[in-house]
Length: 220
Ligand code: DX5
Ligand code: ZN
Image (cartoon, rainbow, N blue to C red; front, top):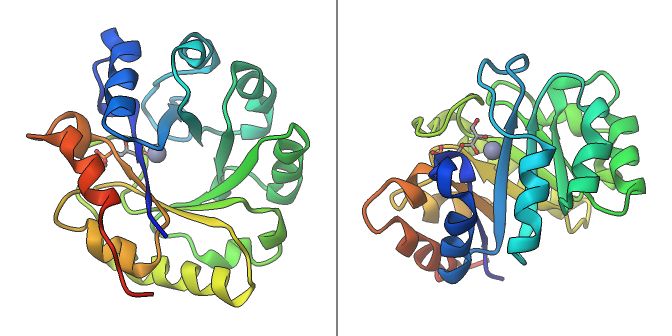
């Protein structure tokens, strides 16, 4: 099994988003990770459905939208219309996780739940059959370029164990502070999708990281 790489556009040049997507596509990215922030669930404001819709015709990449917004239920329709392939909501942002996951899946796209560093996988206990993806945040959401929080590593292993134990094919995405130094350990912990923003767009030979991560092989 090869891991997928999902570069986060958050660290790209926002004046040249179309070119930046073409660049990651040319370097072998599998997905493009779209960080949506509303200035409420997190202080920053980033992009919304109109930007995603404008980018959609310019790439064949799988669009992975990570909603760091309050009341995510209000935003499903516009993102589906914009053409995303996956909508991941923060488990902490809704009191109705079951309902929202069902609503996303009814639209014919994949549904995911994200866990902040302090959140327990127990939040997912009763929604496992609805989850196409679990996103484990390894920084506190709100900004790119932060340091990976090592204390979250056991949670990656715990979520991977749950997926295996339940015989599910749920993707396990890890997001925040991923770089050349920690990618192997994260994959060994069980991640199937690695998000990387600053390590791809802002580091030396960042584009090369995409191929390097995809070539990592581990004993299963
Ligand atoms: C953080 C976002 C991440 C972040 C990743 O709120 O969800 O996707 O931009 O960026 P790096 O890889 O720079 O930590
Ligand atoms: Zn993200």
